[in-house]
Length: 568
Image (cartoon, rainbow, N blue to C red):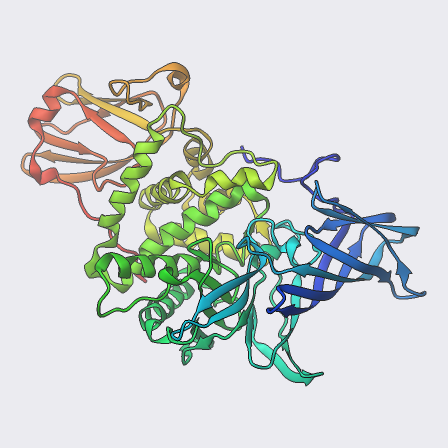
């Protein structure tokens, strides 16, 4: 079952729901020399029940003032209490706010920190050895609250209208296109267009001396790469895969790219490989910039994978977002699965699905341990989700999605994904919502099939043996490194196992698909069968053990087939 994403009455990690933001008009003025910033925001709120208290997230900020006003009456000043332990700002009012629409204005200031999170400073040296400062953001999971007071949870989606006030010698990029550029008091004022409705962790601001490539048009979307001066020539390969994958995903998802432009920015100091901020994706330089003439195949493959992965998030993660951080695995696993698909279509000679088998083997190694964890697990504090950024989320998660896709069929799987995205666009969803869309399109029990793979640890070992001349018995148990047998609590584990079986009989080869739902399953074999192979194609995330008589019958003609790429 999915974790209930609604907060409890005393949950220290979830904000009350009687006040909900719908729009942020945000103005920030970073000072790169002194590593500080000043800010003001007006947040449009919907109050659903009378309250004299507003709770929102803020940390490492100084709140200078806060006031609220409605359709009538003067603005009301708020009492401000910052709770560092809960990373919250508590605003109190002398008189209760009645249900309706209100506008909350907060002025604040903060520090461009050196922690590579929140609104932080990045430094680099140019070709002459001169040090330059930049400001960049990294908000996932809960660091938007370090840049501006906000409802910093993924299901508090809102529209963001940003204005950046910067030194005229600098450039700034945010999630949307620049709507206007003016000069005020010797400063350059960039006002950005409204974003789509999205989560706070996807908001981005990048300020500094950075240079863009010429745009590539993908449909109606201008796509550019940005780098510090002297490195723009390393952007051509990344721009090629960015354009190719963006076009591929528009076709696959059946939904146009949801932003008004797409910028990919190489940041000198960046903690992650990349971050899927809508329209302003930030990257570690080595994950985006590469010399295609001198780079190794591995370096090119890494850039292609990361760029395609993050582009996949523009729909799966940004357009539709998890309700809470327990759903983070699905964002990352699905993007990993889609990156393989996009890169394989772009460069089929790379045989990317075959090389993915190496990554999948690493997931097998970890998941075979008794200390492994389920792919999805309950998350109370957002930091509890940090453990999801591992091989079980990315490689195992992508592997079980591939197994499901091959079981129900690539076209049916694609149509189920489209149904999911269309049903939850600009909103939030949970793991089970995807399974329900796939069940609807496939007309198969997808939730029952997938829950065992997602919510319990480990993977099955299938043991195959022959009973009589034409009967095969397949049993399942949890795999263990203890002689390949079960131990401890694994004794009661069971999965619904998609199985593709290849049988050679009388010189002819046939393939069938089964769903093993019991601890032991008996399958009839054709008369005169000669050999068989379980998990033909290698798509199932499980191990197979053959009894000795079956091993003697095995022939190379039953070897593994390659994964077929999706075709439009």
